[in-house]
Structure formats: structure tokens, C-alpha cells
Length: 278
Image (tube, rainbow, N blue to C red; front, top):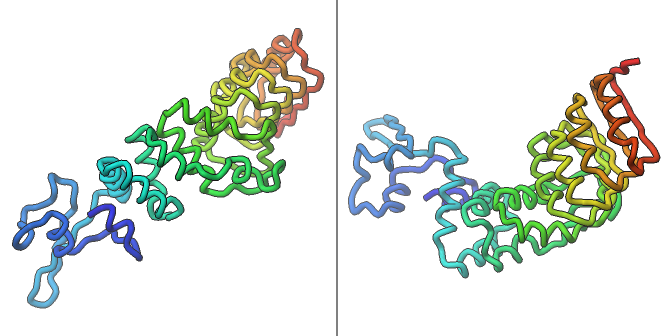
């Protein structure tokens, strides 16, 4: 019921009695007290002398989750066939994320279908500078995050170029959390330029720790505290150039930066502050 509704054109989120009866294979009318253990909202409407019942899930997200649960239970070949036909169907984008979480993205056939395009071509507009991001790219990273399939995530992100320049793209904090999870599975990154972010220092630190050859980093913070300085930059052994874009910064954070980098290879430090402290 859920999956067929999402695949319909237009998408069906409210089902009539006939559709529900067919899906649950009732021999006669749908029982008046049927609500699928509370999963379905039942609506009654008087149309002339006739009473019409319609049904919908508590939330569209629940419909997407149950659709993923249905796909997970299919034979692997049928799962591959479905995703081969629907990977680019926006109606099931969230279904794929749920599917990855439910299955751990363990099917090699589905892995090939979902990640057939090399990430560099999707991720960077011209191979070096990105001024927009295709939502399909974020879906891929979110899907890897949901799957928690670390070996496959490493396999995918190792295809990224060593320099990632995010240009003027603005991410939500959840987007950056997911990207950090995936980028921390790289080991070859040398430069990351992303001046606009409200990411947590701990997330960025994980990326730095696992990419020992990272020499250039541009990153932004809404607020930059002493603990952020210590957490983030104690993990950057090879960093030669650091650019910080900060809305607010503590004076003591600058002292912490100086202490952390006093014995490092840092050659340049650029600090852009929306609210200067001097």
C-alpha cells in the first residue's frame, strides 16, 4: 500500500477504501474498526446518501519507512531491479535512505546501482571549484551515513579528489555532520575549503585526524571557543595554512591557537571575524 502510493503519479498519500481493501486482501468491505493497529488514520465523509472512508499514514515519513521495510524483505534480485528503475525517482529518495539504514547497504548489486557515478564528477562542478551541490550528492552521503557500512563508505570516499573546495555552498548543520562522518573515512585529503559552516569542532577534528596529509584548511564557525581550538587543532599534524571564518571568538581562543600551533608546521593563519575583539 505504502510503496504503490509513492510510485503512483501523482503520489498517493490518502487512500480510498477500495485500495486499502485490495492491499489487505479483504474478501468484503473493509471492517469499520480497521486501522492497521493504529498506523492508519481513518476519515469519514458524508457524500449525499453515501459514507466514504479514506485512510492515510500518521506522517508521510512513516509511509516512506514502511516502503523501505517492504523493499528490504524482497529477494535481492528484486531489490536490485527496483533500485535500477527508481534510483533517480525523487518520490523514493527518502525511501532509499531508510532502506540503507535497514539493510546496512550490504547488497553489492544495490551498491553498484546507487553509487555507479564517481563522486568527484558529482561533487565538484568543474573538478576543482563547486558553487552548487546536486541534491543527489547529498542523498549519497546521507545514505552512506544511514547505512553505517564503514568498509563500503571508505571504498566510496577514497575516490574523492585530494582537494575539496565547497565554494559558496551553504549546508545545514546536519549536512555537515553527515559529510564529516564520510570524509573522516578518507585518508588522502590534502585541502578542504569550506568557509561557511556551523559544524561542531569535534566533527571536523575527526576528518583532520584521519587525513594526516591535510595541509590547508578553511573552515567557519558561528562561535569559536577555547575548547574548540584545542579539540580541533590538536589533530592537525601537517597543517601549513589555516583560515578561520568566525562570527564570535574568545580572546583566550587565540591564545589557545598560538599554544597549539607553536610547535607545528603552520606557516599562515588567516582569521576573519564578524565581531572583532580588538
